[in-house]
Length: 351
Image (cartoon, rainbow, N blue to C red):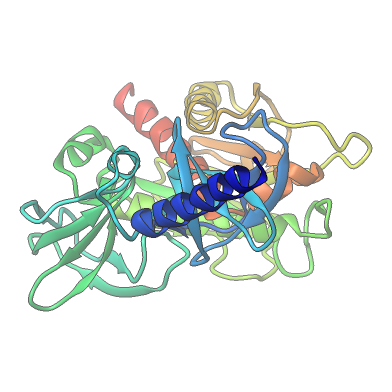
């Protein structure tokens, strides 16, 4: 009886090893601070994080989640922010977020469209492609195309090249939008749970937002181009002297006394700006799923003394440890920016 059990165990191990060898699929992480959980869903306990360019063997896939082999033990990550490499013949892999194509041709829709050396904004920009240039698509995932032609090879964000997106965001073309990255220099703003600074979060969001809006044909002006102190008077002088269509001041919240508090909010001073505040906030809430704390009156200098359509947005509580980590990820920043863009587009269309 003992021999039979040992034999059965041997063949079981041999079968599992063979199955692992046959599948040989690996998860390539496409974002920083991606949560690893004990099961396939956000309701499972978080046990760690993985980061951009890290590679892990895939054990199985289920309902949009992937179980990966860690250095010690295993864990689950969402397939939204990974690429899958290796044997793509299994049914699970075919149902993953990665697709392969050899025939699709895309045409660049805007001048100075950024090409990167990987499928995330965390990768370096390698080239700027001009409107009308054609590329063959090598592969794609939920958000990115891997493209090539005789001169360039790289990755481009899908929404920057797909014609339907160009049409739906046509109202953004030639709009002058002033983006104000809150704080800067010696004024660090709010302090996060781990000692991070609001000024850095605001600047990161502003840079991503500028990239998106510029690609959609908007004329984007920043109140600060780097980590420097800018007076409140200087911040509002730009939109007031320009033919500004919208002014957005980017901020993050902190409430250390209640570290579990969450949510996003928007503020307006002049009644006529309530509409843009609501549209932008709804866009962010829809894209991120964050708690909507409402669009309300706010007596802030940059919107009180501003004579153009102007709002101030608070994009999350960096005093909340879990949210602070989430807000630092490129994936979530992308969602915030997409929400702002969608809200602005809705506002401009309904003017």
